[in-house]
Image (cartoon, rainbow, N blue to C red; front, top):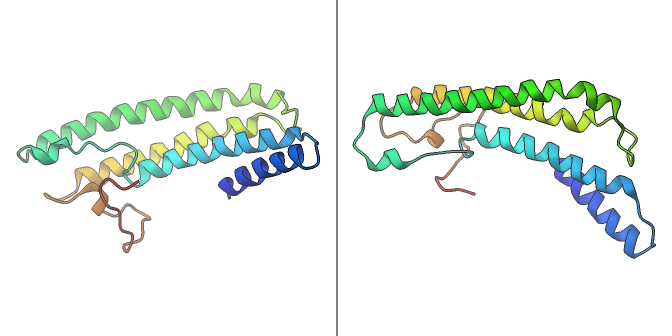
Length: 162
């Protein structure tokens, strides 16, 4: 839906500008703010599917479960702290954003500012879930082979997939 909004807004802007020679200011705002929401939701989904950040260097070293768990835990703590800070500062920035209005759409900037704490909050939940799944996986099992809480069992994810 968000990608559809971006596509619609950009297409309308091009048609309006070059076909009927009218500039519509709301299309630029709609496209850019939809893209912000799309990016933040995409980050959360990337974390959820284990595709955001994945170190597979351990596949080439002798199996040391304690080392893998320790490094995964350290990485998870760093990610969780950064995401928690994004949620915190995103919420802090909402109050001033409600006082400003987007000139093209006439809506408060808070609607686009809200994308940061929502996306980071979802990514935080998914990062904890990914850590939990990673710590409890069996030897030889890929992170991407282990289904996350709401991932369909028939979903196939290939390492290196784009």
